[in-house]
Picture 1 (tube, rainbow, N blue to C red):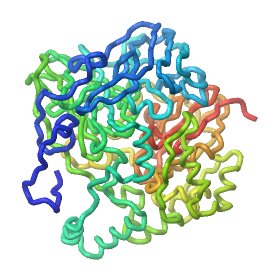
Picture 2: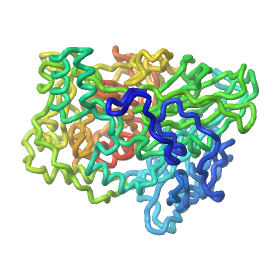
Picture 3: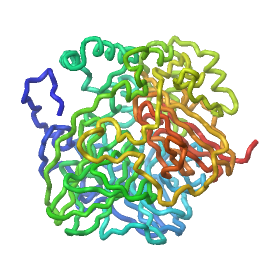
Picture 4: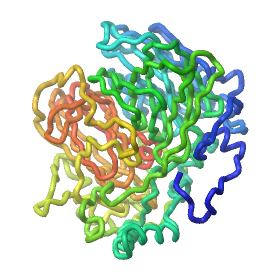
Amino acid sequence: MNHDPSRPRGWQAPLSRRRFVQGLALGGLALGTAGVRLPAHAATDARSGPQVLRGNAFDLSIGSTPVNFTGRTRPAITVNGSLPAPLLRWRQGETVTLRVANRLPDAVTSIHWHGIILPANMDGVPGLSFDGIAPGEAYLYRFTLGQSGSYWYHSHSLFQEQAGLYGAIIIDPAEPLPYHWDREHVVLLSDWTDLDPGRLFQRLKKESEYDNRYKPTVGDFVRDVREHGWSQTVADRRAWARMRMTPTDISDVNAHTYTYLMNGTTPASNWTGLFRSGEKVLLRFINAGAMTYFDVRIPGLKMTVVAADGLPVHPVTVDEFRIAAAETFDVIVEPSGQDAYTIFAQDMGRTGFARGTLAVRPGLEAPLPAIDPRPRLTMADMGHGDHAMHGASSAMPSTPSAQGVHADGHAVDAHAGAHAAQDMQAGHGAPETPGMHAHRDAQPVHDMHTGHGSDGMQAHPASESRNPLVDMQTMTPTPRLDDPGIGLRDNGRRVLAYADLASIAGDQDGRDPGREVELHLTGHMGRFSWSFDGIPFASAQPLQLNYGERVRIVLVNDTMMTHPIHLHGVWSDLEDANGDFMVRKHTVDMPPGTRRSYRVRADAAGRWAFHCHLLYHMEAGMMREVHIGEAA
């Protein structure tokens, strides 16, 4: 781990019970098998994971159940009394029926079947797909499965996903896949907080850097001067100061708030999946984290990636991969030569981890690897290229200084972004500019391909100009598809990158896109306001796609945060830097300072959600409605 200059060499924090249970980052810490477990009536078996429900007809009951991950009992929102929710096992080609009953006393609920292609009224987004499920009522979901693979389901109502309403879906294929395995395990990763999720959102609005406890110190400044010289170090500090940001702000919420879980168990509880030596074991990784990116490795084992977001890809063998919130990766491992291997999933900011074990029998453990050094963002990571030290302010919009926003803690399902809309309306001393107003009200609002300006710099929509909800813009974004990501470069391990992924099925549409839509991912760190093109969901017009058309969507990340972007109802066919098809996904990761494109076949009529899958970013405004229908 990086040395903290404020502590003497060799200093180590005392091991508190909370750190032991949660698995916060303590370099080289070895955990035992003791730890806090769920109450028996809500327990997940540390050896086998959640309950498995098979067939094509299901009764699911959503209610409140007390759980205990940290030594403190807290209420969770569960399905059939289980956290995670039961694993649903379906079969491709069958029609499934799911009766979902709401046993919560005072909250509307819902279930969204993430990555499943189905009719709009079955998608489970209150305010778009249906009205939601009121207390004491039930909703009948029914749809036919045209796909196979690893997926998941979760609530799309307020913060219920964070409170425990999520589970895995496995769809067995109707025909043999191009790879085989002898045994399989689902590895569902998630993040838990003892805080009421609504209060956590309020805290993010009031103090967005609460968990950013590794800001640069005087000692860091002295070290940087010694390594890089005075002028470069001062220029770097000034550039970050102009953006009112810090290079250590990797994630909004981390292990100082979260306990990371693997199949519903803490690191101390040690979920265990069994194997026999020489078997091919399929591990289905699903990131059900509300706000967490995980970097996954199994020391001593190579992993061969065979599927991404449920669909087969040409095999690629790696030591490690990053999995964004909402993504899934299937990997095959062949353990032999030792009796136990650690499955290690550290958070992107290196503040904590989830862990489990592959073993020949229950009760075994393997050594835990040390947490990697904490990464630091650079100006190049932010898409400022060679302008890192000179003229960085030219990339910044003219915005008023952040005043801080006190959220009221209330939001309604598909009306995510109400808080950001209030920020916009209030203005905090910044009047709305004509450019902003014209862009927001124009029809259609998104059919403007901004691209790059004559100076080679990224152009931006007028709605970002002098916008109190936009605190930075990228200057020279690139796809960076071959980049494994912040904190994973040159770490001595073979790390998966998007450029490694190639769908076996190829481009199933084949047409060139008929038009191009460019959207910018925007935000204001201090106010914790997030949006597309600087316009929060509550103030935005729907994006209209004509039924049957082929569209290229270009995303430009103007923020310093990573954003996993999910378009409901249709597949997202990711392109390479030349515009050629690469891989079909349902969630596309967007690191800071990147510009990535994918094709969409608008073959699913209805109203669909399009949003960042970091839960609190979506709730703070980074969401749009996409309407697919006949051309007007």
